Image: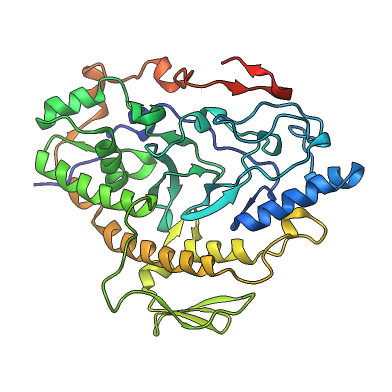
Length: 387
């Protein structure tokens, strides 16, 4: 059977039509690889007075010490103007700061230039956020995470339009059409899993009407989703292939290098092995993931700024996170070469077919956020926000 073309495959932007521009911090210091540093940065800010507080804050056109904004959805952060703020740091939350790099953020609307409240309203344990990013050699890569993405650049596509896994962010009628063609109705996460495993150039997603191929592609995609989300049982490499610290890591490592022959990762004189080449070579967003992760934890920050407040020594938690990241990248590197298998030779459900079925084009309302009125949100200076 000849290989098919994917030119008429529907784009992800039509299959998951609601998307949001990524949150924009406007200043780097409210995010960090560790929560302890964030609390210390906040304490330094609220202890400073007058011009010192303003300089530490790093004002922009969108945020100054006098900007009045409401709380983030979920009641996170304060509402009084920062020029008068005092008290403890809002409890930091986990976010995805870079591909595969979970860090911490002070969840306070006053610190964030563009927080995108519509994303915070639908962020919960059921949600999956999807971001398009280039992989190795520019190949498209869909990143999926349970954390709020702060990657910058690509738009964020939530899997669900409402909290609690309600109202999938799918083209209206898509699930019904797939059910008719496949003989069984897929779950929204199945469609996402298929997209993760089959996305092509231009972020197009070739769809199949073959139930066996669909099942195989969904299986591959679900494994990738599990590895990327890391919200269940921790992944492990087979015995003998699991990375361990073979030589203690220094208190403040400066350099990172990889020995391909030894399959060893060196942080100065510290040594982690075995590290499969697939983990070291894994790229996302145009950068090698392990190098970017290490750079985020060794950046000094300009003296006198809040970004310079960082751990005095390498925390043990970072070592644990590094070992888990190596495991995740190694396992993803094993599964990714199989992504093209499900649609190498198959009849597609094309964009033309979806247009003829009335699934495309999607109605304008499907590209806008749903009205989420489940809870009150506090506006500037403690007023009730009207949604």
